[in-house]
Length: 422
Image (cartoon, rainbow, N blue to C red; front, side):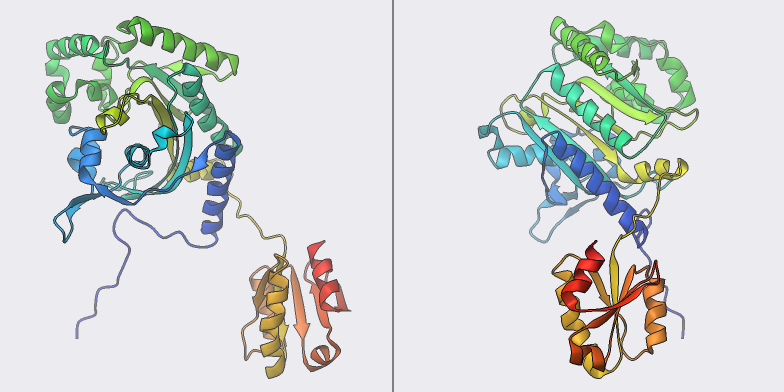
């Protein structure tokens, strides 16, 4: 009889197990707390969406829609996709739920899994986790800078050092067409240097994406290409100048990167990335920009918006390289050890009393010796142990042992709760 193959998680995915799950929880709580300090409220959208949402919003000739979405037809014949990014679903929700009727702007943040069929490698997974924020309903440069400042503050709150901000302006529908014409002319004149097949195809479908190519020959070529900031209309130029000025007021240093375009079609005006300031390590930690035309593309009225997203996996990886990952410890954790059947049953009632006072409480396994139960308490890093037996039940007391100081006292339940809570 042949051995059955072992069941494993799908390629490009991974399990988040204790104690790492506490690190994830700590980081995600930190991100949420910072966002709420800026006045952002949590939002959650479905993991599956109508596939048309991403074709209309993200762009039909982007890598995400062309190659990376998990798309399938359900039993009702509807074409659905696992969400590959967070902005388009939030804009769909904004329209569907009438949030345009609320006081503007709307500030929202999200946190969850996203899915892309990509070649698994360091920092890239098929199920990835992102945190992001969107500010919808304000066209001013101050909101661009607010979003950048939020992303910047979040990374610094995690203790991450040696990061830099890259910014660019890619204009809007009033001036981008003129820029693309000049860019396309330049690239066509040097098409023999476009050794990357996908970039040759993009010359006709999406020439801006060539600027984002990491192929060495393309990088050498685009360094001398026309830049979008040289073709900005008066409105976009004013917006660009104001954004840079406000960043200076906040003492947030930045580098202008004229090849920065981002990979999604909905971006306009300001785009940015925050990356490690390390030679050879350019994995983006947080990125975003303005997308003033997206909601209109999805069937709404013209609505300005700006946002960013950051990958949790990449954030954890750089925190690991900077020795910033310490498993958060539970300061107070109680184990109840019990001797005898009556004490074993009473332990469950006693645990409820401690939990009602927000004390983490675990009942030691049944049918083990007291010595074994105490070893168990130490193995799960308990700070205190309560020991109960027949005499403690009869006297309505318990033995409380502090595993850090080794001090042991006989107390009533109320006194024990007060002692642990100190």
